[in-house]
Length: 317
Image 1 (cartoon, rainbow, N blue to C red):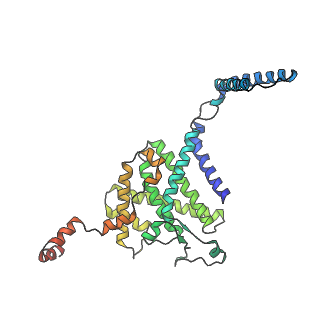
Image 2 (cartoon, rainbow, N blue to C red):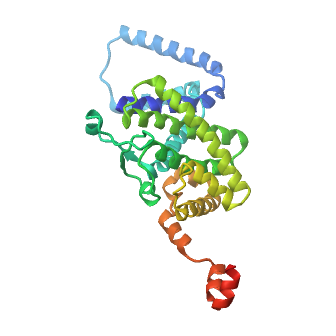
Image 3 (cartoon, rainbow, N blue to C red):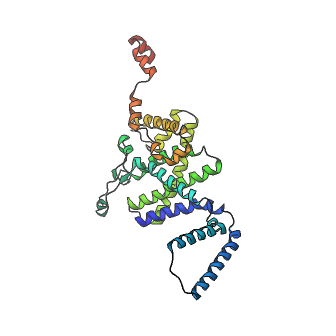
């Protein structure tokens, strides 16, 4: 799997370097000084071959090395590398780390021994189940499956994308595209590692379905956030994260909505530099605390309970 991981990082880096390479300045002006320098070095080498080589003095060697470095810098060779490659590589690493933070809350594994014995447990719908490792699966009673993992991951990614939109248009599009690429590459990895899906064509077919789910999820969550209506956002969470289950715990639904709004408020107050450089601090709110918040009676409900029994009965009617 190390080779597959290397290929994934190579593809991410190649995609991220395209803007830097395309925007790099022309390198032709440096060609002439470079040729002169190489020609001069070649002539010096031929002269040295015709003479007896004297013992090397360490101090003189250091001085020559310093002089050569200065000549290389003045010749323009150091400007041959496209500008921005270091920055793009750093951004790729930061987005990869940021994605891993998003994918960890619902992580799961499937035993290789169970797969070889063809004893992997499945749901009624035929979806394979594994062993839960992320806290969200236990807190919200979600099945340790690919579907639960992908939707919890996409929910966290949506909050990051909402913050990235505050950048200028071109930067937001480029950063979002690189960030989302991590998810789809990881989806392919999970299909292969956890579910033994070795067919690339089959994985690509599933990835197309996941892409459509991702686009629909963005539209649904955007509607709930834009309308500032918890009912609309809760309906979107119910359809996506909880698969429109009729037996869903409404406490869980309310806790997820409260967690999303609180996290968005935290990210709004967080500089974009911290979002990229300190991703471990973004999702610092514990979903369990949101369950405690949901269980706490509201002020209006407390006032209702504090009223006299006759008035409370009238208010309930």
